[in-house]
Image (cartoon, one colour):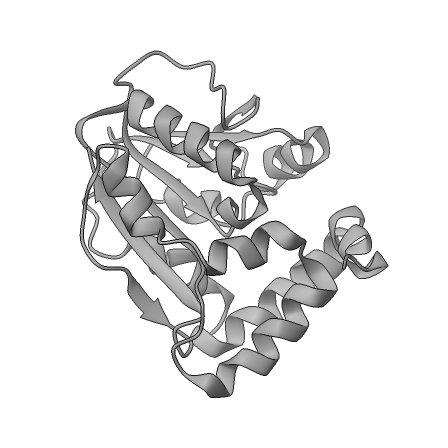
Length: 207
């Protein structure tokens, strides 16, 4: 089930931003949400960072505070236009995450925020493979995305949100052992860190 609200949320920036802020309240607000996957990472001015599926630059704006070498990649020209306006300090590339136009072993950190749930299973595997390819040895893939709630109180809210704004791929991710998939693809990865009653997971995986 996909509602018109999903289409509107991507068409109108004010609506997308409002939904993001509302959804982020469970972890203490959007600023904290956007930095969940960055906790514990060592990022300095020379760190090569890729903000994968960067959207309008919501997390890119935090990454550029630490590094002068941030690249945002997204397949949406409209999102990239907004990102360039919102965060001009980064450079941007229009491309699909499963076929990135970058050399091997280029980035120290690859970050993505609530984007993997948009991908079909085979697409997800290709993206993880591409992330592994473009990361330097010892580099880190850090992400935040949906997770099946461990606290049953959170299931109604998550279910309504997914029904209104997401597609079947989001439901598929709830059934996916994402950490296990990353390990299968060659990453060193521990258990996810869970937030919001287990409905959000942060994973940091090392090449």
